[in-house]
View (cartoon, helix red, strand yellow):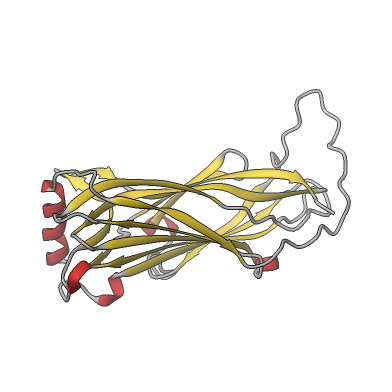
Length: 250
């Protein structure tokens, strides 16, 4: 902890630089979505515009992974969660710090992940939902030849073989230490099962956020996490997710 405290102080004094190179995200999905099990139904009659998903709710939420362990004392201890599947969601992670610098830090801190599990209910018959855009941010410091990679994986438990994964890598091709605020968005499309009755279950949505650091030359610094200046948090590690709804596809 003393070494990490010294590192945070050093980050506060680091001059922000644009020398980091952002490598474009690549995405893969391992299978095709499952066909809908029921036909689409017309929306209920209403005097106001119909908003699909407006009746949906999150029955439960849990987290797993070494970046937010289940024994961490409750969701609020390692993450703050707000939002829904219509307006979008935001997750702010506390103490989510991935770092590598030779033997200065434990190897277990080089790669962190946090997986969110949402049990969604209250769906409208004949509709299904998918994540649309996943955004994440934080602060990165990289020595020459160091890199940090971000992985986002999404799937529904009811069809875990239909999985979407994206990877984005931030590297420093320069010859001096560089730092920058990270703010990246990727598109993610995995459709839930078709809701078969009004107010019925939608499914369990899972999203895994993983960060991996690689120090250049064996001793170079690679850091991703929050940034604190004079006791004030300037950059938080967080994710934002938007969703989209559609009629079930036959």
